[in-house]
Image 1 (cartoon, rainbow, N blue to C red):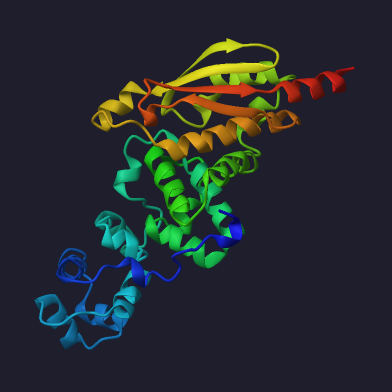
Image 2: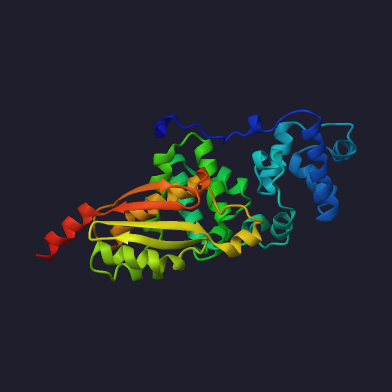
Length: 313
């Protein structure tokens, strides 16, 4: 699907299902905001633009908020209607935001954190560049992540935030090629980082990929164990397995998902840019998320090698 045909849920009314279950969730959330987080009823009624007496009736189950009224609450407390409908609201993050700490991220994305916020900033940049600020607002509210939380590129997050962010982009109609392109754009976000400066020291593609996979990938993520099975002047084949420590933390759940593999393919393909050479070609021939024992990537940098040799003459 082309970029122009992508439809975005900037207007989220359709994402909230109607019926008793949704009304029950609204009552629970209002109760949590009032009783647990000490938000006064007068403040909630002002935010929703309803009478305080009517808000009490909503909480008692004798009246319903309409979507517009509840949207105002969602906007004010920085969550999306879609995340609310799927019961993904993190009260701890809401509480931190209310206390003035806007750097908190939901606990589900903070545990087992072996990725970096740099990847999320990269995805956010793609959304803003292609769809504008309104879509970026949907993205940040969906994950309850403020601009303050996004500010530190080296901040640890887990691989599931990366995967879920890419899945949201896919749900807007983007295809695999777009996810690969986002991965390629990671070279821009990494500029100036220790990782980028380290890779730039290598003189040719073989050396760069050999040290990238064997050593330096740990500078940007620790979700997987990487092993090179073959390397030559023109190609590198390596495997990626789940980090056993993270399997313990996540009760055996495989780390990340298929979209993160597409993202990694893009990042690998563009790694030659760190040494001023054309992109490599990357094919994932096995994938844990498709039932294989491990992920296997074939990286073909024959063209980059050719250009490097010509430049070296």
